[in-house]
Amino acid sequence: MSAQAKVWMGLAAALATALTACGGGTAAKSPSSSSSSGPSLPTSQAQLVAQAKQEGHLTFYTSLAGPVVGAIAQAFEKAYPGIKVSEYRAQDATLVSKALQEAQAGKNNWDVMETPAGDLLILQARGMLAPYTLPKDAQVPESLTWAASGGKVYGAADRVSYIGYGYNKTLVPAADVPKTLDDLLKPGLAGKVGIVSSTTGVRWVGAVVHQLGLQQAQAFLAKVKAQHWNVQSISGAAEMDLIAAGQLPSSVTIFNDHEAQQAKKGAPVGWIPLEPVVANVGLVMLDNKAPDPAAAQLFLQFLLGPKGQALLSQYHYVTPGEKVSFQYWVPERGITASQYQKDYAQWKQLFQSTFGQG
Image (cartoon, rainbow, N blue to C red; front, top):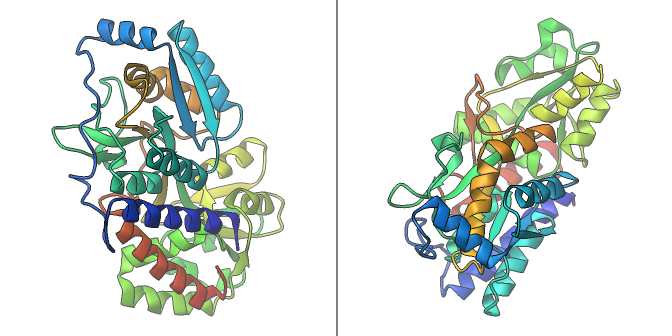
């Protein structure tokens, strides 16, 4: 089983825990009613800063990896002297499980969480998120926010990456480079296309279902099966490495930022968005019982504002303010956690019937 598949299994287990704790059966609470209004905060920015400095601290849970986490904390502490950021970094399933266990024990340790969109659905089902108003200088399109009532949101994207078709230009002739899903069935691409068997591959199958409908998607995937694609139990980044090295001609599960990084190194690679492109979204969320609510609000403003976004760009993350010319799809948006779990199970079954693993 792939590492990403294990992550989703962890999320599913966390969801089951959340629904049980809520006294629920098979369905989660509706998004509009599942979270509290959150703490009351000063309306003026000066008073907010004063209260945050009095708190003097905040706890940041994140699935971001590498030096960017420390860089964000240090930049915030420089902008607001006297407020210390405690960071806790882990895979998203670990973050959700930790947050749920802490809440069940009556301990609310985190203030701000930055993690993929699936986690919002689980925490929202448990009633743990506080709605907030987007900062005025935030460049986040509505399609990358999770709405609450009164013009507020439960989550907004601070980073986004897109899954599309990546290829080696020396191994895939220009005439064979696909522009649509049907183009993937070109005879010249037989045996030349890869797909990862992780959550990324399963979500790509979900995009096919979203685009074509279930019956047409099944017919399309039956044709894909006859194309003898290369199925690999590796990450999308590792698959992009194979393409850049000329060991794999192409793949439908390549993130645009991974291709861009290889292109900057001089690799003969390209990337094409095959609509609807799956968008992987990192969201910013607030605990509705945050121990440091004013500091949390300031940190949220910083992360979604120009300084935080510039830092993420500096560390090669794509920010939501960067406009794209293609249609994208966010699988988690507009549904409950239980519905996403149901959809994912269907996509995974289709993946397994098409590719024999997953």
